[in-house]
Every structure is written in C-alpha cells, then in structure tokens.
Image 1 (cartoon, rainbow, N blue to C red):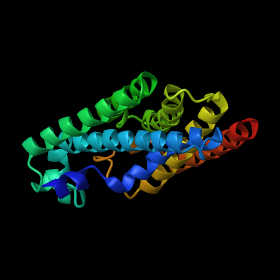
Image 2 (cartoon, one colour):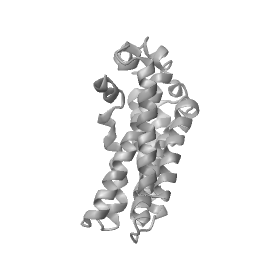
Image 3 (cartoon, rainbow, N blue to C red):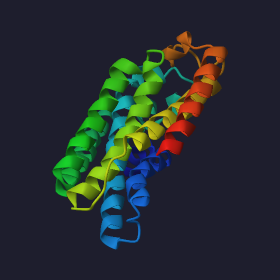
Image 4 (tube, rainbow, N blue to C red):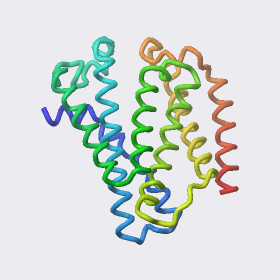
Length: 222
C-alpha cells in the first residue's frame, strides 16, 4: 500500500522542486550548512505538497483514467490503491507538508499554501484552458523560487528576491511547458488533454521563440 501511495505521488517529478535552491545558490549562501539544510527542508516540503497534488489529481480523474491506455495502470484507477486509502494519504501528506512549512517560518508557509492552492486551481480550472494551462505551470515554478528565498529570509539571511530572476524563472518554465505541449500535439488524445484543442504547431513554436528571447533578456539583466 505504501509503495502504491509513493508511486501515485510521482517521486520522479520531484526534481522540479530543486528550483527552491536557486535563492541559496545565487545569494552565495550555499556554503552555509545551516541555510543549506533549511533549503533542503523547503525542497522536502514542496515534494510532499506536489505529491499531494498528484494524489488529488488521480482521485479526481480516476474514472476518466480507467479508459486511458496508459493511465489506467496507475494505482488509483487500477484499484491497486483504494480510494479511501488515497484520501487518507492525501490528508496526511498535505497536512505534514503544511505543518512542516509552518515550522520553517511564516513567509515560507504563506508561499507553500499559495503553491498548493494554485495547483488546486490549475487542476480544476486552468488545465483544460489554452495558454492558462502553461501559465499556471510557469507560475508554480515562480512560487518555488520565491519559497526558496522566503525560507532563507525567515531564517534571518540577507537575501533579496530579484524581479528579474522571477521573470527568468517564469519564461524559462513557460518554454518547458510549451515544449511539452508541442510534443503532445498529435500524440495525446484531446479528450484527456482538452487544452490541446486550442494549440497549433505554428502557435506553440512562435510562443516558444518569444519566451526564449524574454528568458535570455531577463537573465542578462539579472
């Protein structure tokens, strides 16, 4: 059962949360063992929260996923992880993440709650909508970067949150999200990814080119 819960939480996706370390690296505090440990704790919190989001998504989409050739093999739609156990796991995982965030500081807690709420909005509102879906993904990465700075600020470190770094993070994430949509065009059923109905290859390529340009400009100014 624990293995099924862990599988549903998608640990292979947790590498995205390493964005939290950006503030530690760019503020040149990565040699400070205390701040390094706090930053790694922040990464762990976001791993719990993002894992909770995957549990929530699989619970919400379980009926639809049962008709998907690949997703039907996931623990919840396949029945390997019964719904009641998945609900309990969701509450425990998210509760542990929020509780840990509260211990790390009020600023970090606020961003952590905001990140989780953003993902709920993404799952129920933004995901089926063209452009809003990729912007929601990019906003999630920006909140990760802010959270990485907040956990250091809560610890009393002299860290500033540069708007240019946040812009760079947003548009670089947008490039990655658009690249994923580009790969999915023609390969993913629009019934399972409704936002694809509004995309074309030409549109995605133009948006990607624009986002790459803004990313390079933002990083250069930063």
